[in-house]
Image 1 (cartoon, rainbow, N blue to C red):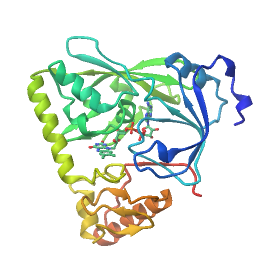
Image 2: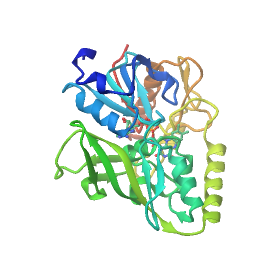
Image 3: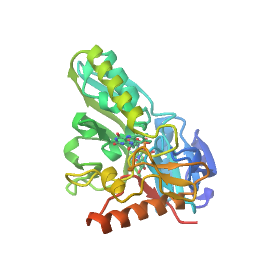
Image 4: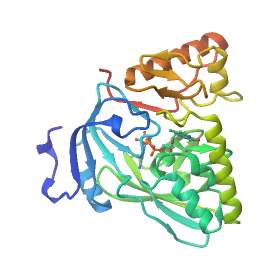
Length: 306
Ligand SMILES: Cc1cc2nc3c(=O)[nH]c(=O)nc-3n(C[C@H](O)[C@H](O)[C@H](O)COP(=O)(O)OP(=O)(O)OC[C@H]3O[C@@H](n4cnc5c(N)ncnc54)[C@H](O)[C@@H]3O)c2cc1C
């Protein structure tokens, strides 16, 4: 796409970035550039920009980049950053909270506990946005994002907003897709309403504290990472399978399989996306050879190799 192909550019109030290094925007602190990136001024500006992009332009919404790797050759389209504009959070009923897709997920956990609503505590340690949590069906410690969603608003490629219910989606373990019976369109999340249970905020805060302490004890949080790289296969743990292959601490370039948690890959400083991807493939090959199990990637890998 050429910038001249964007419709009504003068009406847009957001900010364009060209050849934006995505290492600045993903928790792995590695990877290539986005050909273009857009920082919308507000929700209406976002809709206008999306509607003005030529058909065929690849679009990727990015939250806090905590589950994302952009290959070293870059993303050949438009990246949209929503965390600076869609960050609202408000109570909209006795047990309902509406949150913008750009708000950090831990903010919902804390806000809910402050209002004596429980069920969102698990999100306290998921370091992404609500948009990312919806796209991934993020979960941990027995909680899962879509179990507490009652409604979402999405933005389609034509710039129109739509309200959807969980019934419109096929939802599974780290998987969310529009149900085939829905009107298919390319769309992204702009907000979600969560329905929680009335309960003790004091107990909710204690659970949050416990979840965070467990993470500090078991995850390499002092090194750039993207959380669990692989989905756990049914009845087993990816970390256990990788560790059984003797891969803890194994290094490719400046990336390594964490010595603390084998389902984490850490950037030791200056890793390329290709180093991380090589470790992903190595772990998959070794686990398949060792136990016959095919590990599926949980992190999203996009863009082109260098
Ligand atoms: C230390 C650490 C611990 C983690 N622990 C957990 C955990 O316990 N459980 C868990 O599930 N995950 C975990 N993760 C992974 C990650 O935090 C979650 O998947 C999170 O929900 C991703 O949110 P994000 O905003 O960072 O998404 P991004 O990484 O920015 O994007 C992820 C995907 O979501 C899409 N996306 C983002 N925003 C939108 C939107 N508004 N509309 C449509 N699509 C969108 C992106 O295009 C991309 O495909 C962890 C990560 C780290 C670094």
